[in-house]
Length: 366
Image 1 (cartoon, rainbow, N blue to C red):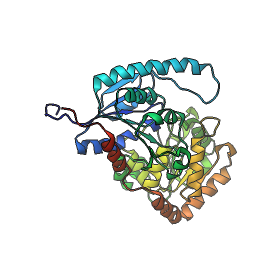
Image 2 (tube, rainbow, N blue to C red; image 1 turned 60 degrees about the vertical axis):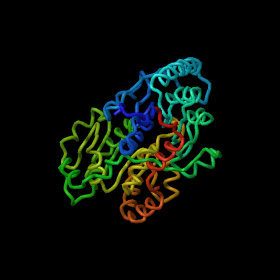
Image 3 (cartoon, rainbow, N blue to C red; image 1 turned 180 degrees about the vertical axis):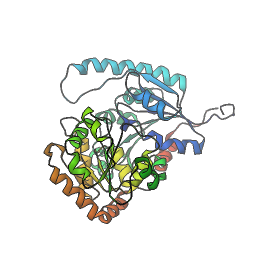
Image 4 (spheres, rainbow, N blue to C red; image 1 turned 120 degrees about the vertical axis):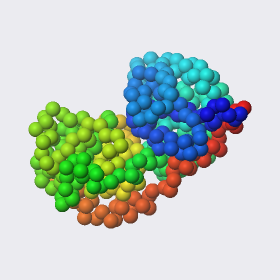
């Protein structure tokens, strides 16, 4: 492929720390293939980035040293500052070797030295912010980027920059290919009783898992349950029940599990929210508290509730009656929630992002 006179466009993808900074890249890869573009990934050398990227693609992966700067005083900030500087020089060496036409960043602190190094070397960067409120990493990269793509149009009020463009958040294409019958077959469920899909995400699963275990009998009385989590030991007794199926990790079959679900209980990370909206799944959001995050999930969930897209249940309350009442409300008024999702969803966010990468990338190399 690289034997042509004009080498194909090569894009560095970067972002990491959590799956939320990595997975949206895979929504763009089919569009890269359409255009004949190539891609490599730069992520954290010591985090889970390589595992996630290499389990989902054959992209070449390069690891760099990374750190995290906190918005509060912490002695670790001093150590992490030097880790970021080290990652900056590693990024310079890598980018000189790779010679990409552009950098596309999904955020996280691993992306900061990559974008900084790209600016120094004259390589254009395009950023994307998933959440309603931009993270510190994107604030640090914004002055050195050509543009920043926003999932939420409301984020423009915070960014207040001509660089900010509302594109929406791309959803992995395979999720649209789900088959409800196949999803029920995977779980040995029937179509007579409503199916509730429960997922806690990569970081926030444990406490939801435990709460579901504690209230299993009340929930299973009303629903067949698909549970994607980390499986606390005390749940072993429930795994053989006909109305309950547990999955620790799901790849392609996730599309089928989504398709068969009538309702979803989920954290409020942006990627999951946009998947649920795209697939028109009424959902009960259980955002991580500000104690365990920077508050982005609380803000995301609040906006979705204000727009009539979802309901919000605060995990700290632990009220099973409120939990079940909200699920009933979602089911009773599902048409209203689905219409709100249709009003919210942006057409072709992936292609909008691709157009911006195409606009700002360097000219093809001879």
